[in-house]
Image (cartoon, rainbow, N blue to C red; front, side, top):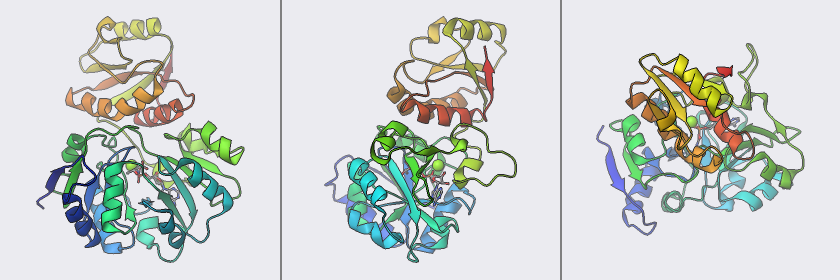
Length: 341
Ligand code: TXA
Ligand code: MG
């Protein structure tokens, strides 16, 4: 398939109308959002949504997030909008928050992965919003990576994974948040955080009171246990290299690397540490800046593969606030391997 490649930074660019028509007519287009790039198709068109699964190589039981630009598009997708959901949307939409509710009959099974719930989000990225307006249908969009790979946070990463597999790519430069949206379920008795992201647990609690944080945010899913969020059970965000998180201070980290500097070993460190290390290093933001780490992490994981890394020893990030999202992605990239120094 010939993939049309657009570079668009102006939401008034007339080519966004072509993109809208393509999506309305059942095409698949990679689009920018403030979190990561998404692989979009008409959420209400089963045949179009199936093409997303094919392009990603995504398991069919892993449901997609439905994107809207207007609150009026939400009600038809869900059984009802409880007051807590409306309050979350008031506080955090448009933005990096996905809300799961019981779905309506309008949402095809393929979009919801066969579940009776649907995840909905209103992105804030101006180009995403312009595309949603232009096509005027809700767009199902998982991250635009090949299944299991780190999510793409710039146009080049999308091209690496999707060129030749989809109708078009809209490149609007790097994503500002850099990790996927916060996913919260309001479909059960108690609000439950399924995936941490740009809207932190503290921000959710400021609106909802206390919330549950799903075990899968911190730990590997226990054998035989059903994932609240099907995406949690798959290996995720992983480069080809084996990643191991090292917990300890910088001196201990450096000493560990000095004792383990085999060929193919690369450090995934904080900014400014590179030159003090005995092995090649890629950095993923300043030690005290979770926002910068989030923005940089997935690109850094892709960079490790380009360097041919075999074993990657990563610095352990803070888990406070937005740091929880960074930690969650990194620990999954590491398949939960941690060494305490
Ligand atoms: O920031 C984001 O959310 C990006 C951009 C493109 O919007 N999208 C994204 O989609 O990260 P995806 O498909 O890569 O991740 C969606 C996650 C998966 O782990 C999926 O299992 C979960 O949300 N999910 C979706 N619908 C769900 C539902 N009804 N119940 C439970 N989990 C759900
Ligand atoms: Mg994804």
